[in-house]
Amino acid sequence: MTLLAVVFDTMLLPFYPQFFEGAYGERSPHHVGFYIGAICLTVMLAFPVWARVAKKIAVLKLLVYTQLVAGTLGIWCYFAETLAGFWVLSLTMLVFKASYLLIYPYVMSLEHRDKHGGTIGLLSVIVHLGSIAGAVLGGTVLQFMAPRDLFLVMPLGDFIQVGICLLLLSQGRHLEAAKAAPAEDAPSTPKVPGLVLRLGLIMLVFYFSAFLVRPFFSRYWEAVSGLTSPMVSGAVYAIPGLVAFVALWVNHRTGKGQDCSHGAIVSAIALGLAGLLLQAAPQPAVVLAGRVLYGWALFQAMVRLDLLLFRFSTPADYATDFSKVHFCQNLGVLLSSFAAGSLVVAQGLTVTFFAAALGFLASMALYSLTLRTATRAAPAAVATP
Image (tube, rainbow, N blue to C red; front, side, top):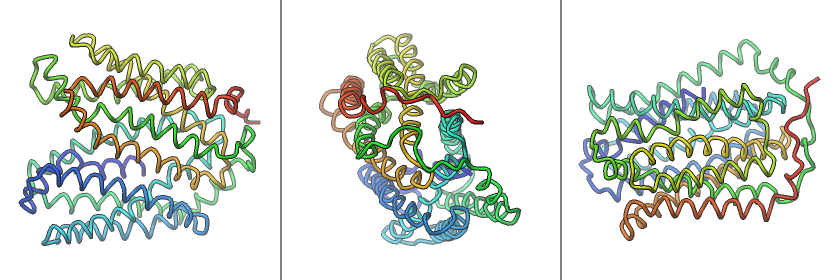
């Protein structure tokens, strides 16, 4: 379900300029930027609401209704004749689409804590894979169909998710999973007052820094390498996603994916900082090496920070706690999208790597100052009988 959601929801992401120009004759880059910002803000605000609703309604039952509404609104977007009408319909659609994020904490609540690291890593890799597949699917649709036709394809993901939920509900699998789920009423480490907010602040700075280098990386690579092939630029851009597959396999083989101690988190962020500085070098080979190191570190840091949240939460609070952290993550991404353009205009393409490195330093400092004592002795996992 996560793969379906990511594939169908990201298929339009790389092609918003083509969509707005082809469907409504809107060519302003600022309009695209504002719309993407509105998407991010809508999901940020809607998801915490669904997390609270999920305390009253079972997740799979809730998803049947929300994704059905989202798919229907997606089809209505196809028929929107005005740009203003499209904005209203599409953002309303995203309010309901945001509920699929409940899958993440729901799956985590069904897993024993000693499997959390592997599950988080697997879902992270699925997101990377889905983003790549979504871009390919979106490009294929645009190759053979009109831009507006994307909104006849995107709702298929919502309707398939509804079918999967109905199948699981009809077979009673959700009840079996709930009975098999670990009955853990307390976190594996003592709950720290205000930990979610502190962790959210750290993630805001970390995600802001991590996403700061993305918008203009392709242009930077072309300037450094002299290669203007979009295919090559896309392949280099995708290196962190490909490295994530390797990191997931290594974590599984070594069993180190469960480590969310202070040393493991700080070392991962420090490696990411080194990868950023290597990418700032003007030699293509060094940039590639930095890209690999950055991809490895980014995967490890993100997985460990997420794992830390679930270590200090309880299954009953997973959805609401995750919604707060998710809000902070997306706020960081949203702010980075505006900051990156301003930095590049003022200082050039290379400055984003140095700014991101400073952000990683700030993340490590915040983590050490606010959570070091709480996580110094965090256990790797709770042993399963």
